[in-house]
Image 1 (cartoon, one colour):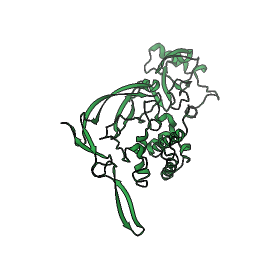
Image 2 (image 1 turned 90 degrees about the vertical axis):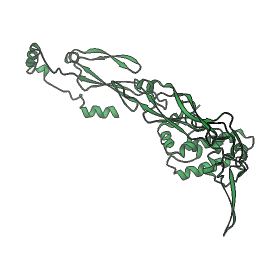
Image 3 (image 1 turned 180 degrees about the vertical axis):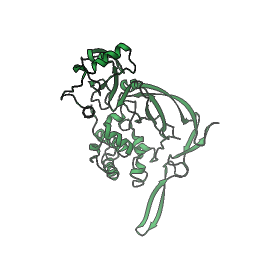
Image 4 (image 1 turned 90 degrees about the horizontal axis):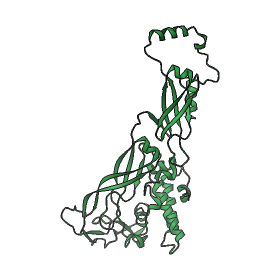
Length: 372
């Protein structure tokens, strides 16, 4: 089932500003908030969809990836992207920026633990190197990650300063009257909990470092520099907080004989004078096995043969790119006496004098066709 467009979910256009996106999300969140629609599963689903859309469109980097690749930029890695992988705690962790203290500590209290804002652990970032074969076919990588987790045996208690709310209320007198504002508790940092006891070796937040092997499913068609997200595999947060994410940066290693250009691959094929004149069948090594092609008699150097669908898969599932084979006639650097005599005679042989046909395209026309 296809996923609904994020811009359509929020009711904004692709050129909407950050402020317009924020306002649209606020409006949708209020409309479909579970407190206003108790027991309404459709409203709850729309509430989650709006949060998913906002998580992506409010982040310039994620928005750019979404505009280029659509939902495929975040799919295929067991939790890449946000959205439907978010739970209510993830969603309400956004509300500090969107709603501030406008709703006091009650808005979302049914999910946030007494109105407290569940803290999120910090994200971790790693690079994963992929060969061209792995890019074309997709791959599952197992990587060792050093991440912070809550120490076994650590105990937390309700923060005495905010009584577990994660916020403290402050009343000030203004010319408009008494104003009440809510600010994050400076003692617990908004988690609503402080440490009661912790084992030896744990830090001030009750955390220890641990190595964990994380399995990452990387979809076919990713590109160098692309970032994927594995939800919940960053650092843990103290108390009842939620883990951060593991950001996976793709690093593509250079192939020995294939060059990538977007979703297309380029292959330089060198043939001799004799092969060009007589025609020849050639077997090429590609990322998906061997391919045999036939070169016709009299093929010209610079000719480009396009093998449909033998390139890089599209992340948007629109098929594959092509393999472009560039034919290069190899000129020998030294000649034997007999060979030299043959080519000296060929200098005046009418059959060896270039007579390009009008149908023969120039180098620049071939390049233009290649990128059209």
